[in-house]
Length: 169
Image (cartoon, rainbow, N blue to C red; front, side, top):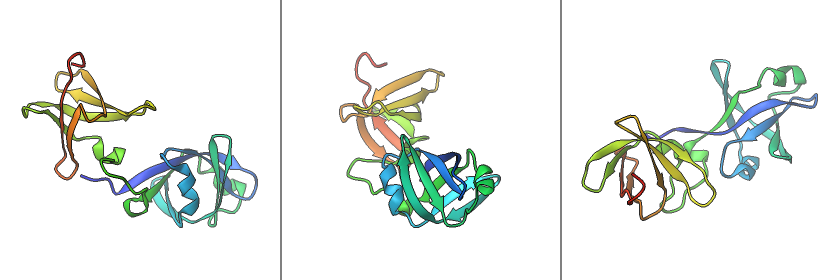
């Protein structure tokens, strides 16, 4: 099942007295947040649509001022709230690229059709991603996300076919 929303950041703390917040980005392309017309904020048991008024950087954090939040008291309550975009507002993917949210949970099979386990996590390493497969026996299998190992990804049917290279078992 494909995810409908993608987390792009987490509010860490207020910034200033006019309602701006510091945000830890959780997206591959945080600069794109400046181009968004609306962001969904989740926290406190509710979803709220917010409209960015300004976006800037301070070290490794974004400073976002939303039109709907106008004082520090209000922004103080938003610590640890998550910010999301809809699938239609997510970064466009290239060929053989996938949203992590669509990969996690895929059933993983080898090229003979034997069930190996479930893709539990995608680990970012810089060179290439590594897929953590939670095997049926409770152990983990780590596979590099390279064409020699990943034969087919079928997010529509919730299935991934892999080749486990010698030494990776």
